[in-house]
Length: 287
Ligand code: AMP
Ligand code: MN
Ligand code: MN
Ligand code: MN
Image (tube, rainbow, N blue to C red; front, side, top):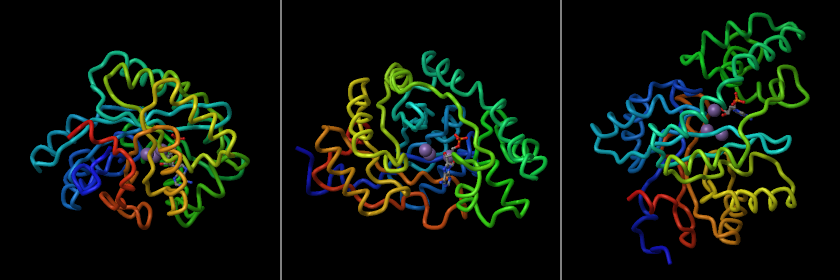
């Protein structure tokens, strides 16, 4: 039975964030310092498909006396749906993880060229070069960099608008892509002695049947937790995934999914409501 009087639940944990090693705008050390300044008591950097920023984030977290968890957010194709699986407590030196992530990253540049061609077809020129210029890590060029380019060019007002009008299924700049399988992602995380967390589950817009089959499969392949609290979830969604975590026997995680200052209103490091006391916080494993 989890401690309901405080304890693990009371720790302000932010276990989902991005640096400029993927599509965040801050360097890993600056991100860790900002987390500490915002009262985060347990912090994880979880860059997309990349562990290169972890050493710097860990070093600065130590300077700030803020406990740190090495993380990653792995891109997955589950049928036609793209999912994100956060790995927490991974060993960044694990060969299985490094090889697996290298494989997941490998198609990004070609995909970016295809995204650019699709945008050019509707009159948006120079998107590949523009996105690459905005990507501090050229191996990790992603849709967020294109979104920032479209904002910079005045095509859209903000990144939110871009993800309504471009880069998503049925809109210009959408390019389907094969990422890791669900089983591959969870296996590479577990092989690196981490635990797998299904990130922002409400974001996938699955119907009830598909969602249940995803949760069954995630549990079957070795998944440990659901990200119940995230800036992507409203209060109803938090309640819904609290219940599902309890029904399926998953632990629960919590994270801001912060990508940078001013990137998205209301998203800030450490700005994460508490988990329901009935849930077992996944961070009980790390404290
Ligand atoms: P990629 O891995 O290149 O497909 O890019 C995925 C990233 O795009 C996510 O990690 C988010 O940072 C961003 N993204 C996707 N959908 C949205 C959205 N609706 N609003 C804002 N950012 C989004
Ligand atoms: Mn992102
Ligand atoms: Mn994500
Ligand atoms: Mn994320």
